[in-house]
Length: 379
Ligand SMILES: Cc1cc2nc3c(=O)[nH]c(=O)nc-3n(C[C@H](O)[C@H](O)[C@H](O)COP(=O)(O)OP(=O)(O)OC[C@H]3O[C@@H](n4cnc5c(N)ncnc54)[C@H](O)[C@@H]3O)c2cc1C
Image (cartoon, protein in one colour):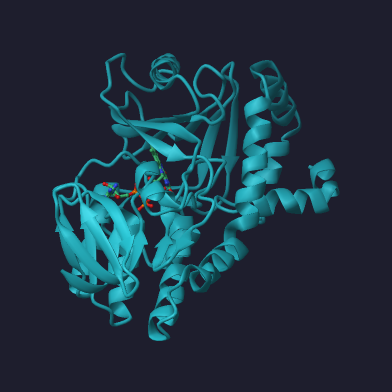
């Protein structure tokens, strides 16, 4: 089967990339591993209002808006982060992804679901992709958007992202209306945090990200939230999947570009990858459009893509990883002390009110504080 561009992976970043390439006038085929779009996706779907505005996500897929969050210390102390206007929105992830797919198909994207890609070969004048089921596809170029996938990245000659965290999520009934809540402490998460993100007054998404011991961390998070009186003491079904904690050594190859989680384009502090993945998808589309028109699709030609996405989010990833490592190194008692100090002098509330501290650009905010230490002292 011949086409201009093959996009591998029908997650939000792959679907969006396919749609944009079709809008540029290319014949695009999207290959997805699952037989059909799933309704339940292991992802909370929290994005910033900046992301929603940039990509025009509004209306029917929005489950909730948040202008505040309560952060719990390891020993149960609470800090409230609050702004006057919504900072984040929560998507119905299944509905959102299905809606994106509908838009892509309307733009002319052809789809093959139930296709697990396991081989890629550069034939000199094109790329040949094979699936586990024995199908073969040919194209001028391919975009790899298959989530965290070391097998496929190795097969594409792009190396692999060695480190990952476990992301867990389930839907819970809530006993009382709750606010967006984050839970810290080594027992709940090694290196990250847990969360309860209300869908409405009766239900919420409960989740966590951790480097180790996912099942133990889940039980402790459940118990902690139950003790706060927020959820009933009932077993909750949850799904678990890996979240990349690092980047590919190269996100480009002969006739190939990698985007989204596949390339490790996500916030190292929170594991949020929708916004950064979409931003990088825009750059992949711009690069491919240019390279296909000039028939310059060698690895050296495609390197331009990595330069452009690193110029946009490279420092965020670098500083984010640093912050994540510092946080992971704090023991619970020290973290508790930090909470206590912040609660006593209202520092966090004052910092949260500052406009440069946002939902997405944590590296930028940290760099601002380093350049303007007086901001911290004045808080
Ligand atoms: C518990 C949890 C909560 C999260 N919460 C948030 C959040 O609130 N906000 C946020 O921004 N991010 C969140 N994330 C991260 C977010 O889900 C990802 O960053 C985002 O889905 C990345 O999109 P993607 O299209 O790159 O990859 P994915 O969504 O992983 O999609 C990849 C697709 O490729 C398919 N695929 C895989 N292998 C193959 C193959 N060999 N051949 C063909 N198809 C293949 C998969 O089936 C999948 O459909 C969360 C993640 C987890 C685990």
